[in-house]
Amino acid sequence: METIYDYELEFKVRDYECDLQGVVNNSVYQNYLEHTRHEFLDTIGLNFTELFEKGIMAVVARADMQYKYPLRSNDKFVVKLRCEHKGVKYMFYQDIYRLPDEKLCLKGVITSTTLINGRLGICQEIVDALAAQKK
Amino acid sequence: METIYDYELEFKVRDYECDLQGVVNNSVYQNYLEHTRHEFLDTIGLNFTELFEKGIMAVVARADMQYKYPLRSNDKFVVKLRCEHKGVKYMFYQDIYRLPDEKLCLKGVITSTTLINGRLGICQEIVDALAAQKK
Amino acid sequence: METIYDYELEFKVRDYECDLQGVVNNSVYQNYLEHTRHEFLDTIGLNFTELFEKGIMAVVARADMQYKYPLRSNDKFVVKLRCEHKGVKYMFYQDIYRLPDEKLCLKGVITSTTLINGRLGICQEIVDALAAQKK
Amino acid sequence: METIYDYELEFKVRDYECDLQGVVNNSVYQNYLEHTRHEFLDTIGLNFTELFEKGIMAVVARADMQYKYPLRSNDKFVVKLRCEHKGVKYMFYQDIYRLPDEKLCLKGVITSTTLINGRLGICQEIVDALAAQKK
Image (cartoon, rainbow over all chains, first blue to last red; front, side):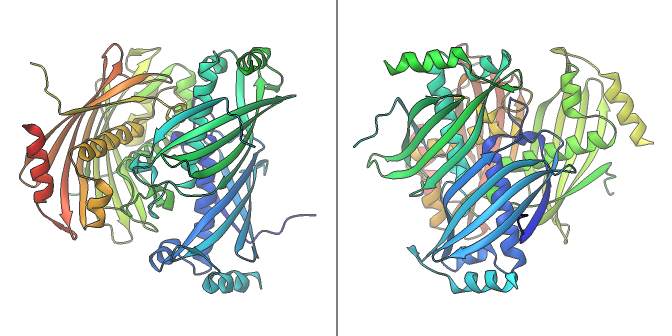
């Protein structure tokens, strides 16, 4: 059964992201995932920086990434994302596929939560926006 | 029961590692973990770059990190590491504690493996060096 | 008098590129400039990684950047580039403008040269490709 | 005539800082320079983050770096710094030497200034602290 994604964003590897093994450094994939989450939130009306300025801090509680195949210099790829809201958690299932052959490069599960003025809490604005985009 | 670590390395947060939330960006912790692994390997006689030049590529298959408490500008911290060899896998249990209060900031499990001339394989040099340091 | 540029590339700021001052960290602009140079070279048939594999190492001898106005989270911008070949040097004049208002954010001069098998030299392949695109 | 430096800080190259050419990526040197400036300021009683929270934003107006010799994986090095105050400018002369052979790797001139509540101005606290350390 195929995963239904909520959002996808295309990128191209930049040479400074590659390390001395000639592949994208492992930590850089987290940058790709973060940027995709923020762009996704933006498309549903939630701006990460604006939320932060309102005292709502979206934070990553856990990042679990399986590295399946390395991206290299010049590679194009897409980050696909599905988001599920569960209590105080927002689960982002994020997978990276090389383009154009759609080879799976990374499978990630990013667990986020929100701190409201420093305390764990549910941000109704986020919950509503996520629910609205599922329709 | 306390974890027995094989190695530890102290760091200080650098301001460029912090993001607009004023905390160390999530992806940067992976840099800390990687640098600690490479320094650990170096102390047991295994140089990451030299291995790479011999056709032995140590690669991360999975990175699972639980973010417990954020590091901030000026914080000092220690990355502690325990390594276990299981078949073609090397499991690195890596935890980050803020200094001097030893507050737990991150719990990570990094699963590595080795590609020898591009194929998954056991590198006896690595296995021996890891076994030797356990004694 | 307006500068005539040879190439331009559009970007969007990614949040992980911003530091605790809420602006893009100074070092990140060099990433933008480098990526733009490599993409420019690619469009004129010169691949940075392929050159490297042939023993031709394009290196930066000097980077001089004037920071005029900071880029922030969510900003779009364009890096414009003009290249001039002078002896063993390739001068890249690279300016960054915020979009859509074209506000000047950075003026940079990047002086590059080539090492051929480790020695300073002129790479005819690069010279020819640069000359061809000027026509 | 030898340069008299005000401050120096030792580092070791981390593998994730190296790019596919096997050397430290050009932009990373700016991280080294920034961290050294912030540590220097800290030793003379000026904390970058605290200044920022007080509305005093130290900003880089120009960075001019000459790359003399590349740093590689495993290299140790020292960043040496001399600071001169000239009107609204603070000039940081920052040179990087590989250790232990003191080979010159980079010569940099970083021109900084201060924005006080968003406007260019002289911060007496910084001027006094810089003057005090020269004695």
